[in-house]
Length: 389
Image 1 (cartoon, helix red, strand yellow):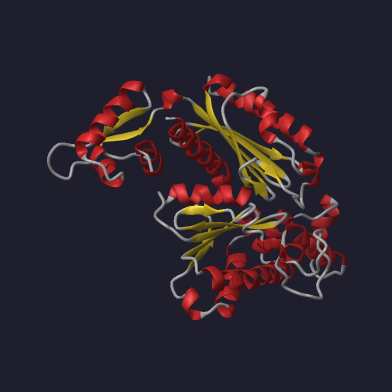
Image 2 (cartoon, one colour):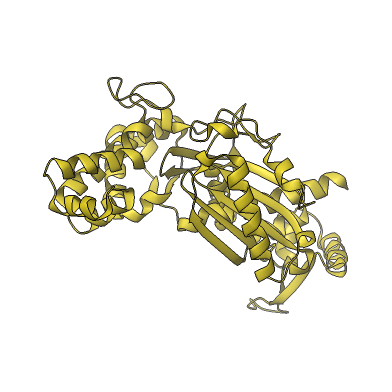
C-alpha cells in the first residue's frame, strides 16, 4: 500500500504513524511527504493532540487535487454526490428512479445531476479525478459492465464508462451496489474490521463480502448474490426462473404484496386505510404501520426477517464473519425487522459462528452507497496513479 493509500484510509494521519503503517523509515517518509506537500497532493490540517513532545500535524489528501463523483443507483432510486478526496460530502441529490427505464434515460439524468452538483460546488468537469458508480446487479469489475442483471436486463453489457467519457476524462469505476456499500463501511472503520458482510435489502437482496480487508468479488463478479438462495423449494417463482428464492419471498415487493393482501382481507384497518388513500402499498407504508404497532404489518415484517435470517444463517456458517451490517430501504422499518433477522441467525447458525458476531444496521445508514462510491473512485484512482509511476 502506498503512502497516499495510507493517508486516504486513515482519514488523517501523522508523519510518524504514516511511516509505521507504510513500514518505511521516518526519514524516507518525511522526504516523500515533503514532496507530496510541495506538489499539492497532501495538505497539513493542523496539529494533533500532543502526547508529549512536539505536536504532530495531521496529513490528508489535499482538496486542491480535485473532486470525486459518486453515484449510488438502486432499483427504484438514484443518488449522486460530489465528494472531496477525503470523502467529505460537498453536494448531493437523491430522487426516485426506475432502472428498468434503461441506461440511455437513467444515465442522461445522472449526467445532468453531475453537472448541476459540480456547479453548486464551483467545480468543473476537468476537476473530477475519479467517478465511482454502484449498480444493483452483477458487474464484471474489469470491464465495468453489468452481466445479465435480473433487475435491469436492458443494461446487460452496456458500457457506462463510454457513456460518461463524452463529458469526463476522469476514470470511471463501476461495481455492484452492495460491494460499494461494503467499501464505504470498510473506509469508515479504517480497515479495522477484516472479515464482515454487508447485506442490502430493498427491491432485491444482495451481499457485499469483505475478506482479509478487501472486497471479494468472486471469479466473475457475482459473489454475494444471496437473493437467489432458496428458502422454500415450494415457494413462488422468482424472476430468475427458480422457485422460493429469498428475494421473491422477503424483499420489498414481497412485503408490499403481503400488506396489500392483508388490507384486502380485512386483517388490518390501518393498512386498508393506507391502501384506500394511496391506491398502492409500498415498503415505507408497511414500515410506518409496523412502527405504529399494527399487528398484521408486524407479522409481515417478522416473517421477512425470519426468512432473510434463515438465508443468512447458511452464509454465516460458511463464512464466519465478525459483523453483519444490514442496509438498504429496510433500515427504515426499525428494530423489529433486525430482531427477527438476529433471532433466525442465532437459531440456525452454529454456536461457534455466532459466539462473537455482531448483527446491526449499517452505521453509515442511507449514505453508505454514496460514500462507498467515493471510496471506489478514490481507491481505484490511487491504484491507477501508482501503476503509472
